[in-house]
Length: 267
Image (cartoon, rainbow, N blue to C red; front, top):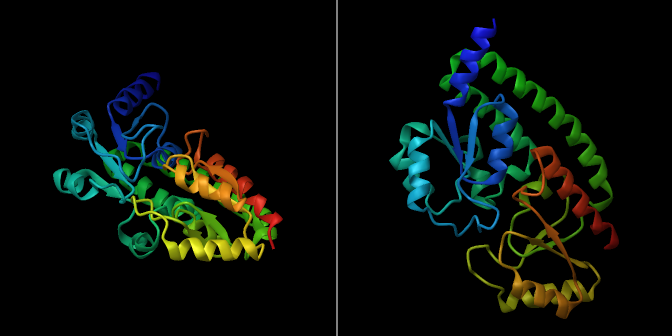
């Protein structure tokens, strides 16, 4: 029995899963047993919307047994064509329509529940001998996720129908899932800045007392937006949508739910 476990561990250590962004790493680690090698291409200081692949990244992807992408990476199509047989993309299949509206698919826990099941099936094809372990890990994760889902829904109940102002559109899926209010995004996240029309609309919302906060993704350049917040007397609320400050996916969502609680202060 000890010899068998040793062989399994040795085999597991030989498998490398490459992911593009931290949230995918957090989700993957929920399904994979300990000992697997999960490597994230982008680091904490990267802007995920603008990041360009380096030669070392391509070498990493070439060595990986499975590559998992969000789909918004500027180089996603290139990587998919180069490594067609080992790329799994969050934005494909049942998620395509939602992805067209907002690229942050992982901020909807129901999306993650479905995608984590796809991961479980993919890992099982890669390592058939560990199928039962993958399934057990997915069941454990799905139970924890569903339990927290109802808690998140309860915590967010007092802030339904509030307008959420953010620098770039990232919280659409999150807001829809929990029946929150309208998303008002200042920028696109792809170097398209604030327009005169947007500024006028935001100023009007502030005058009416409908918004008091500006949600800022700490991984996207927001200097101009922060200056605007100061001028309009909006309180900046920094959110970490990449999960570098947490240990797992559920902690990422816990943090986001707590940050959104400040909306209680608005009408």
